[in-house]
Image (cartoon, rainbow, N blue to C red):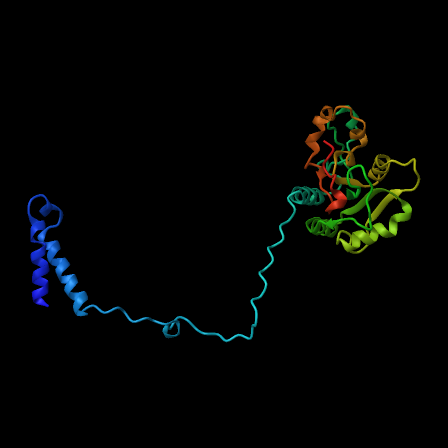
Length: 271
């Protein structure tokens, strides 16, 4: 062993001359010889493998599973459109009746293309919700997926004494089917909300909204297009002419579709 180490050290001697000596000093060569001798002689032995069973911090727990369980479903995220509606409506519901700060979401001077809101006085608070997708009519047999976040917000508001009023251009003979759709979707689980449908072909949703606003305070209006807030938008040649009314968005008017999916594919199509 010593003889082989000496030969290895002697073989490094030429490396220590000239400039090479600055790169590989003699001490480094001696360390290399020592490491070579240890590896060849078995002085350094590899550490024994430590199995998982030998570790004191691991425990084996028997199981009866025969297959991996399905992955957890991702947590349902509340609809982003619902959050401002919920916050605003709850804040309005907390305002005492008779206070000048509780304002109606029905803008009587919308035709002037400016916001001029009126206080509600002592009228009880209500939320108006439009069911019709865009310029079409609500289909209670295929309404789409109800927004669970909206259902939760409406439940909170009912708990604070806020009345829900649903509107559709459907005829009054569809009342039972519409109520069933709201029940299945969790938007009116008790079937106690007011439902406003057309009694004859000459009726307009705007006139019905205005009529109900005379004995309630609509603190918020929910619809998937601006015409659900005021019929003015049905007649504008230039939709940009009413840009001043956009101050009502998220401050009484909320662009929200109660049902998602095919039934509301045209939502938001109208500026």
